[in-house]
Image (cartoon, rainbow, N blue to C red; front, side):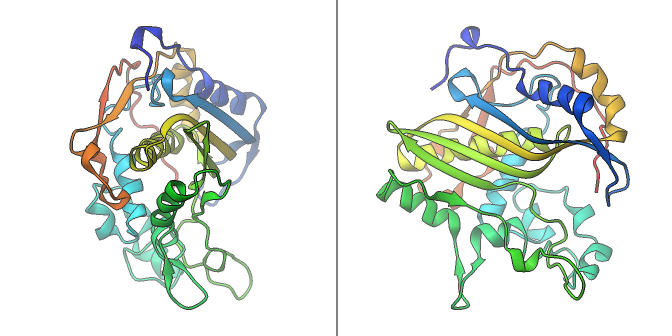
Length: 297
């Protein structure tokens, strides 16, 4: 599905959003500590023939597979620190500390029943059972591809709402993961809506996760993935990230790389069996990495 590397055009969408936030965003206080500058309602359209959206303004080669492993963990219902670690996700300590879980009435290490894994794999139903959203998404695309209702949500309202007399049952409310798939002209289009996006740190990982999901769904359903659309409602940059970002804004983005399934990945028939190592990267020629960009927790 990819053009030859030499025929791909550099993509400026991510860099342009960073510049727009710094120019036109609004400062606000945050519960994380540092102020954030926010621009509401931004969108990127990635034609997958032009390459897989791994940012090239700075190198993220050392961890590009890890966000895919995290999404695979969530698809399988992972919601504890130990379960996430089985998929190579070792960065959830700050959100599963005893202080954060105790505040929500949860066991240490548990993100909670309002988390991504709980919503994706064990969405609560009226009869007291659970509903596996991704299992049924794949089945529905195969059986009724023409529908406009190929949709996933990470949001379980009763576990996320706050206020007087209410206790949130998740250590961090889902930021991404509203997924809408359409089959148009026998091609697969995937749109991911994101409630809140830390543009320097979180969003590059989210771009990889959901473009990889398009590859997974295309493989399982037989429809070629051709476009990934990424919408961010609250797109923000924290004030302690600005200094580290400035050199990147002067750089020239380079063409996106190629990401494909490995031979083992091509043999997978169940979405729950995918792992980060089933994806391989080539043609990646990014600008140098920028270490130590702060992460807000």
